[in-house]
Picture 1 (cartoon, helix red, strand yellow):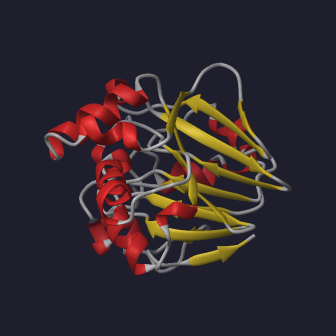
Picture 2 (cartoon, one colour):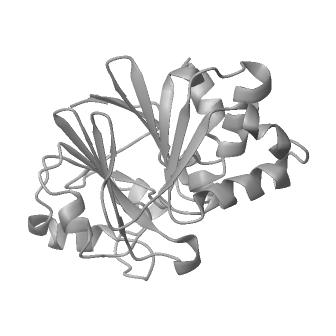
Length: 242
């Protein structure tokens, strides 16, 4: 599996990084994990054909994590009309949230959404199975109205895990268990505050996270300024085979 980092920034674009968006590719198929507001631009920069993205997984309802879906959809409607089905998976109310955002940003386009074959699926207590994919989403500790979730994607023989935005949550332990790659947010260096993780706590709890590799995302300026960390830092445009 290949990970292409379309965006690994925080809500404020620290370090000049784009909004959260991770492209997973295997056997000519792409899955998008998060779709922040800058995602379509980054997809074009990487020459990714939107038609080849079968599924979009959304961690929570903040603009830097799902605000790019309207741009993705209008491109799929008007620029390069999409023929293949698309599945959008996210927290409860995902269809309503996407519809409201699309209409707010591009008034009058919601009525055209029926031209696309889109299936909306909400996270629940049971894993979601789509062909050779299994998706597990568990609640994490972030702004409650955004319905935050961490995500685990099992696809063929590979496991990708993503923390979403969260302070420490015990749900991170099963989400990343035996994962080949775990993308984990790390907004702060030393400060422990609700809603986001800090580097010191991740180091302290590393033994609880039984995964192969941890890569840091959603970093604030303090973390970005550090040259030597226990964990690797993601950057936009990075490609990782695992």
